[in-house]
Length: 515
Ligand code: ME8
Image (cartoon, rainbow, N blue to C red; front, side, top):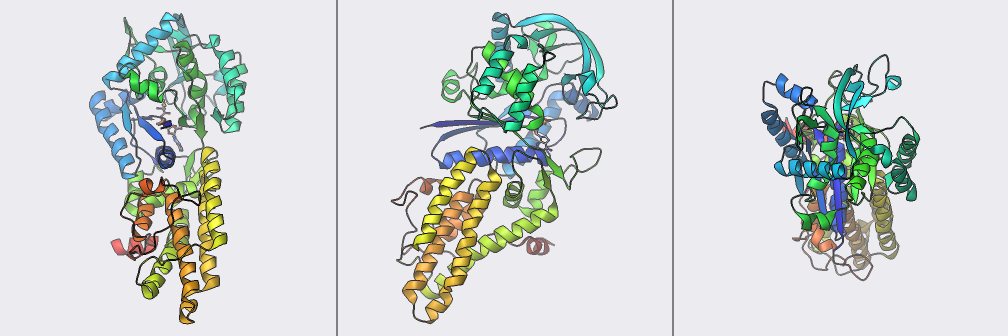
């Protein structure tokens, strides 16, 4: 069985998860579910980044020890992802013992290679970035991303010889334009590699300035720098240093899914560390766009941080999952707005899809005893439905989620139009039962495929359609059996349908019902 190893960035636990974090975790989940459907052995890793001065400070402010604070926040992240249906296989915490072992082992390997050396450094350090920043990148003395002034830092630290690997990394990124996507960010990173100012980077801090972290092996006065610690989670999760069989099975990773702001760490620093440790490089890295809220950057100061849990309580996980991807190209920034969420979910899920299912089942209940008629799908729509699978596969390969959803709904629209044009309700009235049954059979077939195609995006909704179509099996299991039409077998004649009402309640109604 072909494997597919996918990871997300691990979130800082200095504050609870927000919708930007949720966006990335759901995207990874969509891919994990999609690849599972394709019959791959998926390993999906997500988790949290628990070390560093930022978290130590937040713990202090909360009146807790760093570990107690991390325990609390980590659970919050994990529970949120579960609530959103994020089907991770492992949730990693950088405070786990096996991560300490893995980080120290990698540090030693790089050291043995002669790639880690001690040197003193003076620079401007931004706590938000957990990185040194350059004077010329500041805006009015503030970090351009975090809008706060960096502080001067002067210490003796360990450094990693990035300069030794820059040319090799550049060659690697240039060798295949799918290694780092989107293309704009690949160009940006290649340009950064040409910049002479991109030199060796510091991989430790003096214990006097950072206590909350993994100690440098045999150097109790030095603590491993948070980024060097964090990126290693990807191999810890795959078993590095603890389970070599799993590591062999899943490494190299198929996709590191991360936000655009941290591309440098994943496409420059991390590959350099891997090269130094003689480990294979990631197959793909994707730096997605950012989510704004009602047109504004998410920020505590603006007070617009939305708790994804509250959105699930209000609209359900499927609605949020669907909305985040229906209109936003994944490589660009997108906006979250409640009004838009309600509008898109009502129009696509409740109206287009919900009505197609509802009227098909109602007509079959009235005229065919609520069972699948012995018929076959109308030819042209069946062809179209077959082609949609190929279209979706091509979009999913490129992480073009919005286009994949568009293709799914284009066929739903066609099926609705087909029903309107053929008017099976009149056909039944006029004694054209065979014709009407064929039309409805075709609609069932489109619905079945739509459930399958939507399952990675809206798993609960897809399972509801599946159930109403009369299946007792798991949608993924059935989907694997390919039928003679190149996809899977058609809906079995005689199968009892379950017309159990709307699969997606219009949002106003749901809100009214709950008040
Ligand atoms: O960077 N929209 O953690 P983090 C979309 N611990 N994605 C967003 C976003 C937004 N508004 N805001 C943040 C870190 N993200 C490190 C990562 S990985 C070894 C270590 C994304 O909590 C961000 O781009 O600041 C990143 O991919 C993830 O959320 C975690 O961000």
